[in-house]
Image 1: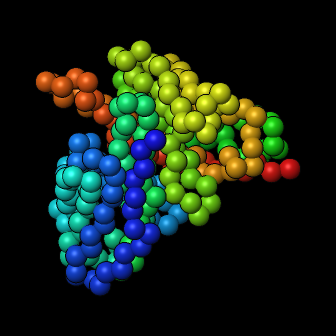
Image 2 (image 1 turned 60 degrees about the vertical axis):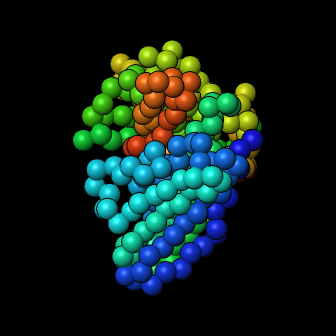
Length: 107
Length: 130
């Protein structure tokens, strides 16, 4: 089954840029979605279809996807961005979702 | 406002059953696929299954870890999706979330359809313990 690999943690200073990777075999051929989960809260969709932001998500959140790596970039990081971030794809071959292992972003 | 509210969680003994409910508001539940996702304490997110929209037959798919034990259904008249959990194990202990899942079907490549989760409920806690 498909496996998505994320770094366990990323540390970033306020105002700087955080980069979170999601590795997977030919993930560039998939549509990748990203979710933010703050402590004690439900996840929230922050990016879908690699680069699209739902209404209400700041432009500071952006994404890319090519080859074997998808990336979530958070620019001008704020204290409120501290959370766990999960990548996800839909595997059409098995008709199943696959989540990455999650990355804890510390500001 | 689109909203999902889960209920039905609690403490249950191993081997017993429990049914969770997910009440949807602000949209028609039959028009969307709906998933259940769980998160064990201190762990990551695990998709456990979903039910497709009426357009796609309302069929279901499940993760291997719960297939044959868990069943997802929907009552459109009540705007509720259900997760029936049988033969519960201690490792089923988790927070259970329901989600609304839009489907995207590329016009020229209908085979390349995909789902994502645009709305999440706050979750309900299930503890399986003797």
